[in-house]
Amino acid sequence: MDIYNELKNFFGYDTFKKGQEELIQRILAGGDVLGIMPTGGGKSLCYQLPAVLLDGVTIVISPLISLMKDQVDGLNEMGIEATCINSTLQQDELMERIREIKAKRYKIIFAAPERLNTGGFKDIIRELKVSLVGIDEAHCISQWGHDFRPSYLEIPKFINGLQNRPVVAAFTATATKEIIIEIKRLLGLKQPLEITTGFDRPNLLYRVVKEGNKLNFLMNYLNNNFQRESGIIYCATRKTVEGLVTKLQEKGFSVRGYHGGMEADLRQRNQEDFMFNKTQIIVATNAFGMGIDKPDVRFVIHYNMPKNMEAYYQEAGRGGRDGEKSHCILMYSPSDVVKQKLIMENEHSNPERQALQYKNLQYLIDFCHTNDCLRNKILAYFGEEIAKDHCDSCSNCLDKSEMIDITVEAQKVLSCIYRIHQRYGINVVIQVLRGSKNKKVMEWGLDRVSTYSIMKNYSEKAIREIIMTLASRGYIHITTDKFPVLKLTAECRGVLQGEVKVYHKKELMETTASQSKVQK
Ligand code: ADP
Image (cartoon, rainbow, N blue to C red; front, side, top):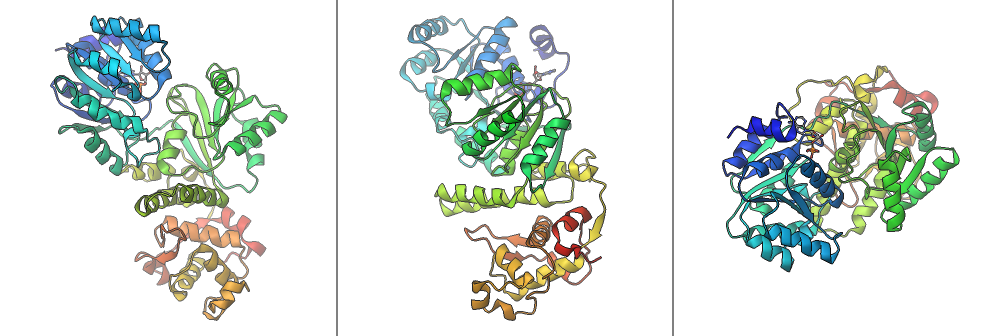
């Protein structure tokens, strides 16, 4: 089978994108696949092209009605018979489609997962020869992921109910090791060919910002960058969305809000206004975005930090789908960490899951405090091998600000953690170092340890910055309990013994240390 001919004839492309050819060949040879490709990587072609070539029908399971519709329209334009079954159809429309499916009119049928095992659909599909089941956004099946959809758990039952087991092809843009294992297990993939094409999005410029006055920063940014181009601002809560929309509108920005608590009509209208460039900016909670296929989003700003790297990567990844340069700015503040922890606590998950949530959150906190390449830190999270030390396009790589030696400060912090027997959290460590007369500190006798008050000239913020930096470099381990405790790691020995030096951005130390008491 000459797949290049079909690639050209139907889709108009001359070459495959990375990973596509191998995945398609394997599907055509009758084997299951798991394609892990970034947004814009070309996942759809991996099931669309086999669908054309295989006899029988291909069912594609997708969580997003809007995406289904786009794909169906696109395929029909190319002359490939496709349709979709989802909850937006009226009863008579549904009956008509089912009749046509029965008459074997379609090569590809897109279905929402909650439709799969409903009477009408299941019975008709069972009578057809299904050659391939494609599963888009496969990570939705995993409870560990950030987009868990219970209806995805219906998929195995659906596949098992078919006359013959079809080839199963699963695709996702986000998959940590735990999630990959779960996708394979829950979907029952049979010795799948697993291809990861890499997570790097070279056109996205990552930047972490630690600004006391976030609103000021934001206005400044918006006034000086991409003034007429689209952008998304993510906030942690509906209330923050509402507040920010009002403030930005007052300043004359073209902006709308989007969150789960809004009336469906208004939310839909706001989304469309954004999609069709009637509004420049959308301020949203994480309810906005999955499947938002707007190619020209030039900036994605996180006004609050999300809960983990996966969510961040996914949300930031909505920028620059067209391959043009786009900014991804993450605004860090310690109070957002507290907020995220509260949300996690309120979920009352089992202890194992909660520990994992804290660990994943800590990775993102470390991301905000590292001086290393941000792109590499993202790629490392997904287990990708790092080709070079610098990307030369993230805020850390571009930052030419002077680094100063903070080894002495680091030693003081580490010694303090040791002296108080690695039993306390960050706030107590800071209080001890600053010589606080806090009641608890006195009661516990921490004023008698030798490191009490040895950093009394440093602001709380400066010490916090040092501690978080040390954690991001692996010298301190922050436990994943409800009340996280600072522990020393084996790696910190080098710092304590003066064999390893620690450097940090001068600018950050000077703006955060009181009385500019930064020792060289
Ligand atoms: P994903 O679902 O992985 O985010 P899509 O399937 O939407 O990505 O593809 C992203 C873009 O790449 C689309 O505009 C698509 O038309 C294009 N594309 C896919 N495969 C190829 C190819 N082989 N050559 C050129 N462009 C391609």
